[in-house]
Amino acid sequence: MMNDKKETLVEQTVTYSLQVNDKFFLVENVPARINLETGEQFFSPITMERLQQIILSQEKPIRFVETPVYNFAA
Image (cartoon, rainbow, N blue to C red; front, top):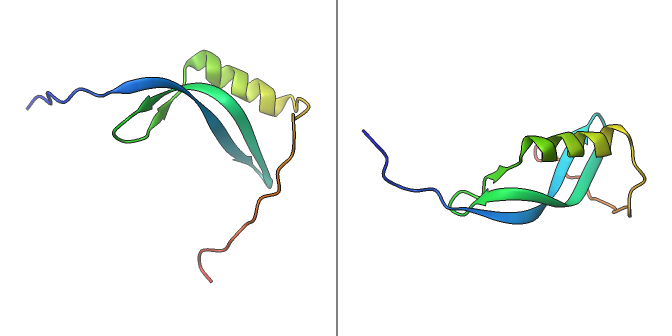
């Protein structure tokens, strides 16, 4: 059975988040293709390489944010 529904992807910039061990990283203004129906984000291989370079090389951040942490299972 063929699905005739067409996905709608739009180019946008997003904030990418990643947790490595106990550190949480945010990278703003990352180019992505967004599925308007599901909200799923798609990144090009070049974008993923750049994200890894930013985080692994520990480039100087533009700012720091304080983030609250909650425990779901109280």
